[in-house]
Length: 86
Image (cartoon, rainbow, N blue to C red; front, side):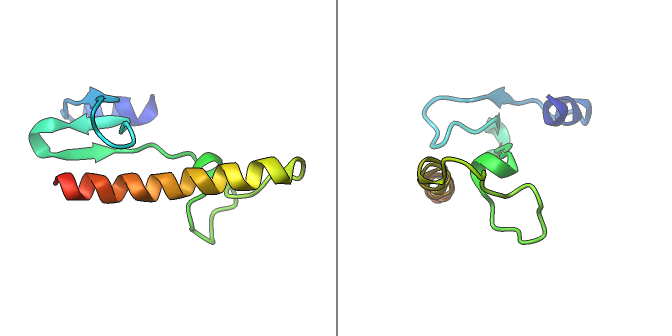
């Protein structure tokens, strides 16, 4: 909600979760051909070593490790597919 309010307050108009685009971006700016993904550190496991929020849980590692790795790989694939679409 914070990103949406800030973006709208700056005068940008957008669509949300537009179907047909890889990864279902959170904000879509069709006229500018731009998208914004709001990726939460834990769920999307970005590769910034300074971020303290990117961590694995201490329980059920056999479940969480593959799940979070799959999320990260899917995010990378969706970015490539969006770049190919322009």
